[in-house]
Length: 70
Image (cartoon, rainbow, N blue to C red; front, side):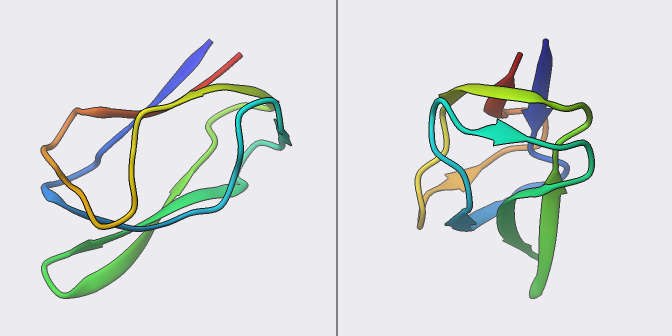
């Protein structure tokens, strides 16, 4: 199981997956905005998306779990 976390304080701009969707390692899962830059959050392993805790437009802190992949 992999928990994809917020790498730095910022806002979610896009969620590119759905619960139940298969993902590959290094696939772009979420796009965040931090320090006026758009940054991708990528899957650290292949698997299936089990939960999405992030919502577009919401702000999150470093370490917050955005997506769970099993």
